Length: 219
Image (cartoon, rainbow, N blue to C red; front, side, top):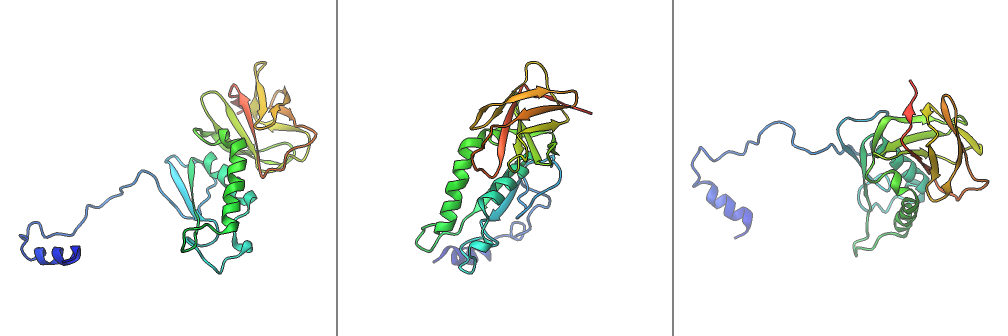
């Protein structure tokens, strides 16, 4: 007799006081898991954006390259949600034999290569005082931090070699490092830290700076 059949047979012998299928009301979770979510502000409670590599969960044979996340979209959205206290749960859709479609496998490989360079800015970090800002050249920025450093993610390559991180107040002890690219020249001005990037940059969807010690944020 199957499990459901056995349960059904025993059900009629249970006393009325225990024959109840009501469950306690209220919320029972460690963090929320909204699907395909991005937010404009830091969420006070931990959350996790749950999404597929396309518009579906699982393997949708109707989805081609145009429906798939690009590395640029994935990396930039990841940096954004981490700055706002989020995790990422990325679902892939294997074939029935368990193999991963080539487009999805390549995306994961490229994402991993980017994280090999920039992962320090996201793993074991926390949201900072503010999640985002804009550099003097207009490049959108995202912030995370640890007890020792502030991480500044440029969501695209800076438009100029010398860029100001507005609102960050450094000191004579400030150092600025491009993750995967070494120490950068910088200048601490009255209302910003001016950073000079190398003449050429590797092609990445986003670039992360490590500023130590953590600067203060201008009022």
